[in-house]
Length: 145
Image (cartoon, rainbow, N blue to C red; front, side, top):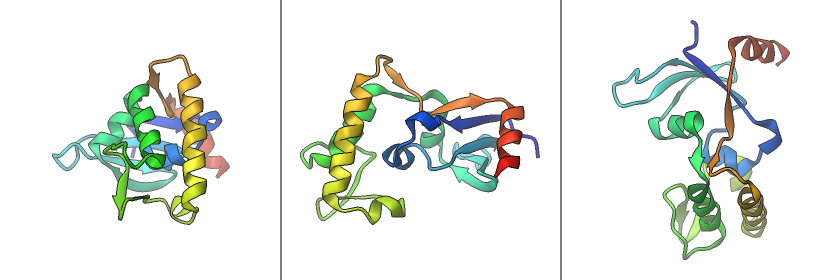
């Protein structure tokens, strides 16, 4: 099946907290937009068919306002700061990725603080974790796996 549009993660920006916020896939090829009528896209993610919800797809395609990403990162180490991207259980952030679940709270907080500094140092107002990839580069990357 031919993709509508494809995206590749920016390897120089790779960070597990960004994987948690955007998506953990290296390559995402959108096969069908709004295939379920609620905005969910059917995608080929690193060679596996998967769904990506409308909100995450929007972040992947258009990026996010830097202040929104800063708020997400701050809410990981600051319990007084609230963000829809961070889910808490008993006041502690809960993550969907096993790599973050297995990290100590202190280590995650330090990673969030360091990542926040890196985001704040960027000059662009919009943060893009994924970039548009042409079909040839996606096909090439698939064959290297």
